Image (tube, rainbow, N blue to C red; front, side, top):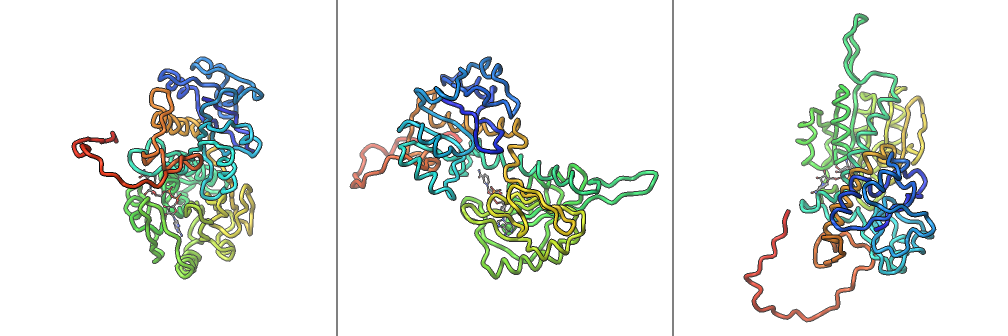
Length: 381
Ligand code: NAD
């Protein structure tokens, strides 16, 4: 199995860390790591070799590769170097990068996208969207705390009392809930809202107030939000515009899988915010929840700082990589128990995560199977 050094701009994470290399080699995997692969995240080549990995230079990296594990999707050149039949695992953006997936398909790569691992309880340990969203939610709050010219906690000093910062979290999924918890730990007074009605209780259990905007959306079977109608969106924006001036910090995390991010904060709402306040837009990569967000950049408009960084987990590359690599190990143990690939495309996780190179199921007549009634095929949770 090969672990390349990530080459995408700004990507500091690595797909396996020495801890997980050690676990995998102990369970029968042979691991080859590109020299310097963990350097940005804080893992040295020596740590990888001590864990049982072999180091290679980039030129010979993919020789004999059976499985490649990585974080970000490969470039066209990287795909061209992959031999047909090789298994590739990583964040491959299957819902938005159709061209990239088609390229993998043409190359004959058997690709598993971490985004496509079904969100079922059996696959929770493989859920890299959640592990990375946790890191992003945490980091977003730290960035905001750094930008605003205010303290987060209430402070009682000889010079009098300072009121705590007021923080609003928009979208209370995995990243949003972590942002609530982090802002609370720093002592801020936190409010949050989401369109999924089920979230109110989770928000309140973290000690935040649920902001009622009068807009309720629906939830898909997988627990994701459904896109609001244009009328609902307009109502949400109008209700928000009135409330935004109350907050020093706004962290936005609202996403609809495979769709542009819902527009929650129009430019006009930003001009109503107090100078010195800060928006951290975690939906920047999908276009942003704020109209003024510039993906990848930080800007100041009418005194309001708007942070649109697109890869916050990479800024916490050590722990983000550690969590991600544990997700990868869980998936690998599923796809290759005992170190040998055994892809069962009848399995919901294997079939769900596979975005290229899945064998076509030939249309076959259904034949009654004798003696199957007593068979138990229970899978461990
Ligand atoms: P996400 O990143 O797709 O979206 C983030 C949040 O934005 C969601 O809570 C969504 O409801 C919210 N949102 C969308 N449009 C909005 C709007 N117009 N206004 C306000 N909020 C809006 O979602 P996520 O954080 O990856 O996951 C969402 C949910 O999925 C989780 O809270 C959970 O219920 C479920 N989930 C289940 C599992 C599992 O069963 N293994 C794992 C992870 C997540």
